[in-house]
Image 1 (tube, rainbow, N blue to C red):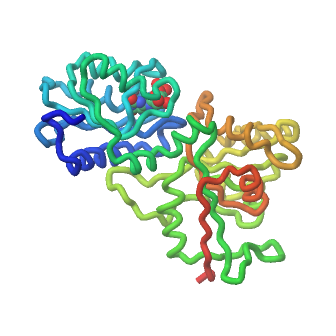
Image 2: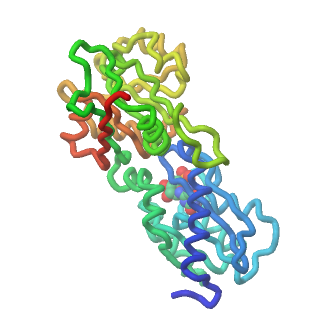
Image 3: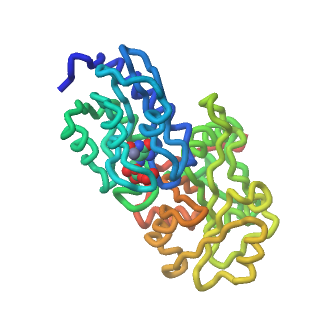
Length: 342
Ligand code: AOF
Ligand code: ZN
């Protein structure tokens, strides 16, 4: 039920869009967590805003309320694209500071899919007498955090599979030489709308051998002037660590590259040589000739020391890798670029 202070739906949606824009500044920085923005609204004007800026850092609502020094008025409304948390994780519960600071009304975008919260944040605020309304702009909120929702509900990242083929159906040259399929225009599109929208890109080592790709976002159009150019992590599935030492992916921004090798196949001396160059190697079990996907997913989404986990991934090839993900039913979105190399 809306209180007499509620805005029109259009104004609610406008404030929620602002939360989402703020939240998306942290793409690639929140590890396996959610991207969250918050705004404080008084008489239709946004008077304070904040976002969750990185893994383990203050949540959006806490960040906003700790930096906003003015008094909270009874009619002020706190907007956030995710239900405020009520658990103690790496930071204290947001519901505590919301109640302590005297916020009376909260409008949220989507419920938190983390089982530690999952509606309990809303219930707790309501039990303290706050008006809590939502969801608002649910489709957009779910879209931004579809990776977070996939991790919390499926235990794996949101997966987009991308393949490129020529008009006559070829994906490679018969002799193993690189085949340029897409146009610069198509590359600009995929760097902007695919690569810049995920936490990580994943390929198999055979694609490194054939194409020696960079897997960066050099053609991306900048969509948000408040953020720097964004580079997702790059995962290479390479059971025996066959990757050529001077492939572009190891020599350009090596700290963005993570090799996934097989527990019982990767030579220890190779792992330490790569580590000395700042290239991380993660070990996962094989199931037959391919990686055990369930174990791989757990590895990818679980934070450990200097790795904070991911929530979304673009699988770019090649055929063996596509097949592994397809067979496991682990594809949420399938994109095929048909090019003539022009
Ligand atoms: C919020 N506001 O800005 C975020 C929330 O590891 P922690 O302590 O950061 O907790 C992560 C969980 O907290 C995450 O799974 C999700 O449930 C919630 N994230 N909640 O109220 C925020 N980032
Ligand atoms: Zn929180």
